[in-house]
Amino acid sequence: MNSIVLAVVLVAGIGLVVGIGLSVASVVMAVPKDETAEAIREVLPGANCGACGFSGCDGYAVALSKGETKETALCAPGGNDTAKAVAGILGVSAGNIKPMAAVVHCNGVSQNSKQELHYSGVQSCVMATQLFGGQKACVYGCLGYGDCVRACPYGAIRICDNVARVDALACRACKKCVAACPKGLISLVPLHETKAAVLCKNHNKGAFTRKECSAGCIGCMKCTKVCESGAVKVENNTAKVDYDVCIGCGKCAEACPVGAIHILTLGGAAEA
Image (cartoon, rainbow, N blue to C red; front, side, top):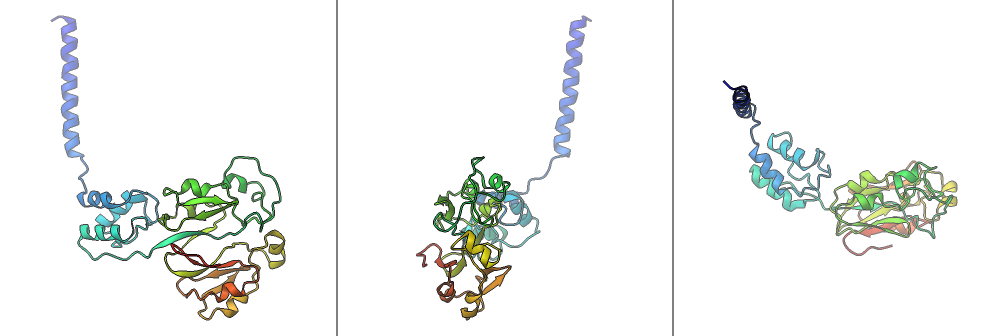
């Protein structure tokens, strides 16, 4: 037999054997499709934000399908419509998602906060923080370089006078901005409910805070004394509001000598 023909036959034979082997392996080793997980994944918004506590939408869908969690209302960006759709697929009652929106706990705009140095590096809060905590005298304040803006997939955040501000109606409570802020200044507040919010995270003693920012909380505790619901506490020299207890009466904001507390109705009108 001609050597060329023999080579062709051998190569063809090897290819046939390998092809058959791969076909058999694809059947034997195939991972069965989880149709329930796929159906759930289709109704999730695809933000992959991790707000549900799982590794994105795929992880949440698989966990629901396998019964690792029965909570159908963990997807904040999807809201109650998504919760109902997931519950319908699983044949269970839908949970209820409380609408929330992000708030930046800083009012260190140019007229309130002092600058301690000039920063001309990479326009990133994370990078600027590495240099003595940033350019502001208050090392707890918003630096305004927009890490949260870039992290937000919904375009809900903008920088106003060197401080990040959130459009509550555009916010989907995905918490990506919360994770992006190196100062830990962003948290979620109930939407369409009147609540008190402390727009400061400065933990220095009052005398130091006054030198750094005229709108900084000085931990004087006047807010705690007038709060009839017990929603305001001072921890580590800074006032903090329990939104589950706060009734939005406004007394704490009236008592605050520096204007660090604001009464907000996210998604509606804001009161100073």
